[in-house]
Image 1 (tube, rainbow, N blue to C red):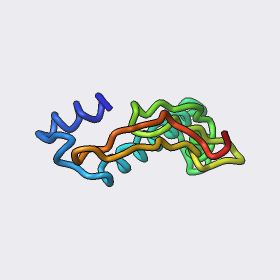
Image 2: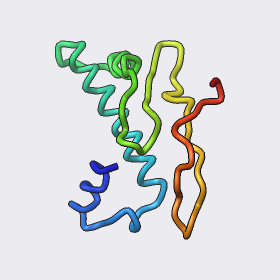
Image 3: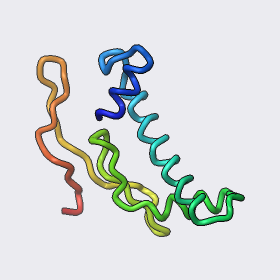
Image 4: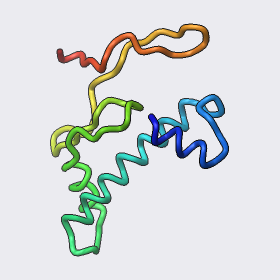
Length: 105
């Protein structure tokens, strides 16, 4: 979360200034950038959509700094994660009461 807070501060904003859509966009962009980085590492620099897909499918346990559960993609699984935290709203703020859990556990 620190990286995201630093970014917001560089734009003159705080966590209180944004909503969940901003966080979701940040997480999606982090995943796509990592997929593009993997694609660039696996090619000669001429990156196609298929290369991006292969790059995404090579992501394993991508740490999103506490904004979401670690993300993994494979050829067979494009969900990214099947985990979530359970939380409660106290005094108007969300507070996690579990670590990331999966329905599969």
